[in-house]
Length: 128
Image 1 (tube, rainbow, N blue to C red):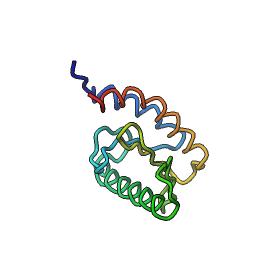
Image 2: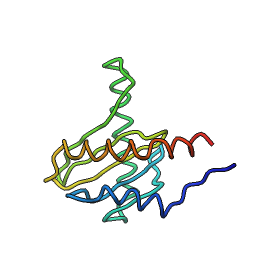
Image 3: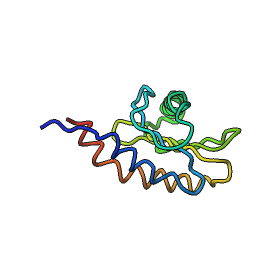
């Protein structure tokens, strides 16, 4: 039995995080290609995905080399126009982008809740 992603259903799930200053939620493969997106500024979503993937990879490699730790959980970054959070879900990356008024605590809470919710279904798809 082949398991498939339903893009519309996945976008609907991702949109649930887009409240309280969270502007967009992206799901990416490990190379940074956009798989699903919900939010504002979709013309920049592919570029944002590539940048988020690059940030994740850089931090992951730094942790492995300098900290002897390969278990990177979440990357939180403050940018000029807002904040982003990136985490791994199954073999994919989840990225939340917010305005500057969202606290890192709220951003971390939302990305953790979203990744917990998506872990099992995305793992099933990734393994098929």
